[in-house]
Each structure stands twice: as structure tokens, then as C-alpha cells.
Image (cartoon, rainbow, N blue to C red; front, side, top):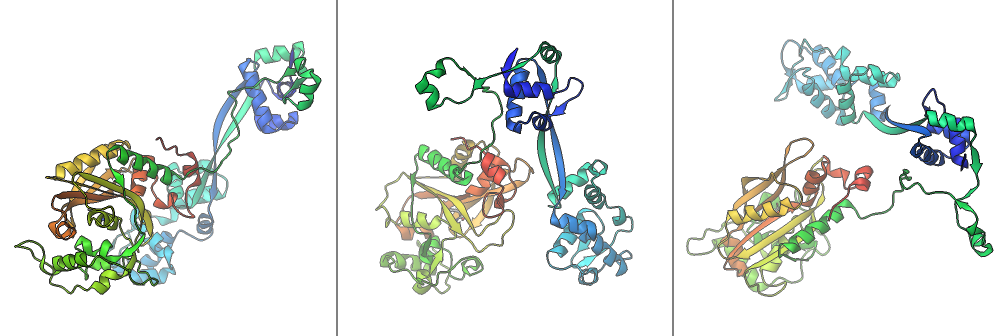
Length: 503
Ligand code: PHE
């Protein structure tokens, strides 16, 4: 029997009595692992070998995990210090136990949260107790850490391993290992004699010009063989999903808004009937610009109407805030904390001219907030802004629009909660369920604009509006738990590479 060279080499290196790893076979056969794998699959297709696959898990301690094995877990230190301070007999001051434990910085939080989780004791209003029944000396997570460090993963408790991975103390890497074994037919073929057939795997200009191509035998393609993974550049899943959101909203009859990322507080806050002494209007929440410090132009008549809404309210029974309002503050430049600034620009008639109801507008754009970084907060994120201007809108219209919108992304379990915004009444927050953790996650905020917003803008019908988080929508769609998986230097490359956004 004649077979391509690589197949002959694999047949000869394979064994009928035991599975041999393809990597070992490749080495004996002097082939690259990919070439040996390809040959093994070709032989398998002809029944001469069998190929089996298993997934091996490799456990490795992270730097932090390694440190804890050498020293101890922060919660163990805290327990020891708490017991020394008398916390086994009754509550003691937390500061005292922490001070004695020698824990500092981030280690304190780690110790406290794991202490409580493991019921080492209770932590309540600045005091700590130590549970006498707790046994930190044989903490399952510490035992598992030690087992991994000693190369005895099989001794470790599976739940403890999961927990260690979640705590970032352990990295788990999966490897697919393929093995081959000769079948009876393979043995027979070898006994009858297998020769290497000269096959040509590349058509060259020489073969063509000499006419030799007509006589040679070409290597067959195995279209089922695994190909090497090549990671190439591609559009980020956030951008892909943003584009899908745009298509969806355009399909629902909306037009896109555009406008500045840095804008006057007037458009960001004042038009939205946010009093100038509102706590969200401080540097705790917003980023102010030094250069330019203020906007060049604001429409004077609109400024006057907004000022009057803030001072006296609108309509015969109107109530304003009666607190100071100055145009200086309104002119101040900020990075926009929401894209509702764009909605104000458009609704005012100053962006695309007077609007004639019904109208629908949206944007999918970046906003900036001076938040503290955590798994669900970043300093910048994308907001899906939108509004509908029409006669007689109700909360039902809002809920219906969201239900229709989120359905397109496979999210059908929306929940609504009454909320407060200075600029909408009624207002609703939207929630969805995280597919992995089952937690209820806030995905957006919405409402129907108040007269105090619409009257100064010159709008005399209803406007319902919303701001939804694009990143939270992605979380619900793809099940990742940390917003930093898709943004910034800590992002999860595998998630970004492998997630397919269906459009
Ligand atoms: N601006 C709100 C936010 O950022 C969202 C919103 C827009 C709410 C329009 C109501 C109306 O949370």
C-alpha cells in the first residue's frame, strides 16, 4: 500500500497496545506536531488508527497564591490577631484586631471579606468577633493551595479550587491532548507493507511550465483536520455590539444624534432642571475642563427660559428651586456625564431645527464620570441614549419600547423599578438578570421629561427618554462579570477573540 510520507511515519510510530500522545509520535516520526495530527486524522478516516482526545487541566499558583502558601491567608492572620485580642469571648474593636494582625492596604479588605464568608466570626459596626468553632488551621483553601504547590492537585477539594481561582490565587489552563493507537486494520496494513508515496503538496511555476504537473500525484486535502488558530485583528465586541444597537434602533425608526463630548454644563445639567447646587454637579462626579473653561455661545433666550424654570418653575402653579442660578456656572465646560446633553441640544431646536412630532432620536456614545473603578464601574462607558417625542405618551409606551429593543438581543426578563430623576416624572430604572451569576443588574434609567425641562425648550407634547448602558447589555448577552474584561489593560483577550456578535 502506498501512503503519503507523514502517514507512513505516524503508522510506524503508533502502537497497537497503547495510546500514544501525538506529540510523542511526532517526535519519533520527525514530524511537526501539526503535520502528525493531520496525518493521524487522515489515517483515522481510513480506519488505520483511532484518535482519542482528552482535556488536561494545569493548575498554577499566581504570585499572590504563592505568597500565601509561604506565609498564610490574610483571613487566617486576622483570625489569629482577633483571638489574641479577646474576640473569642466577645466583640472587640476592629481597628485593634487589624492593627495587631499586621495587615495593610488591600490585604485588609481581602481578610475582612473572606473572614465573613468563611464564618470565622462576625464583623458588625466596627467590631469583630472570633467564632470558637472555626478552624483556620485546616482551612480547605489553604490545604488546596498547598496541594497545588506540592503538585498534588488530586488531593485538593474541588470547591476550594474553584474558590481559589475566583480569588485570583490560582490559574487554570486547559490543554487538549490527542493520542493515537493502531487499529487491527492498521496492524494488517503495516504487516503487508506500507510505502511512502511521493506526493506533491505545492503547485510550483516549474511544475506548470515543465508540464510535469500532469503526471505527479498531489497530496490530498483533509478538510476536516483542525487548523492552527490564528488570532487576527478584529473589531472590538463593544464596537460590534454598538453597531448592532444602531442598526436595531434605525430599524425601529430612530435617527442618530451627534454632538460634543465636552460640553457646557448648560446642556448637560441646567436644561435638565438639575439645580446648580445638586450634589451630582460637583467634582466628585464630573470632570471639569480647564481649557476652554467656558463655552463660547449659548442661545440667550433659552438661557433666560431655563433660568426662570429653575427660579420660578413653569406654568401658573410652578415651583422653582429658589436657589441661586448663574449663567457663569451654566457656561462651565465639562466632559459629559450622560448623553442626555445631546437630547437637550436636539430638543431645543438648535441642532437640526424645529422638530415636528412624532420624532425619534438616539445615540450610542461615550460618557465620562468620576466614579471609583470596580467590576461594574469605569470612568468612561457607552450610553445608549434615546427619546421619542409624541402626543400622549405613557409609561406603557416606554416599557413596550424597551421590551421590543432588548428582545432583539435575547433579553426577555426585564424588570422595572420606580426611580427619581430631577428631569423626568415618572422615572424608571431597568434591570436584567445576569446569565451566569443570576444577579439582577441595573441596565438603564428612563422616564418622561417634566414640563420644567420641556417648556423652556419650547416642546409642547410628551417626550419619553432613556439612557442605557452598552457595557451592561454586553454583560447580559455574553455573561462576563467584570466590565474591565472588555475595557482597558485587564481585558479578557479570549473573550474578545472568541465572542461572535451576530448581526
Ligand atoms: N441621564 C440618565 C442617566 O445617565 C438617563 C436618562 C436619560 C434618564 C433620559 C431619563 C431620561 O442615568
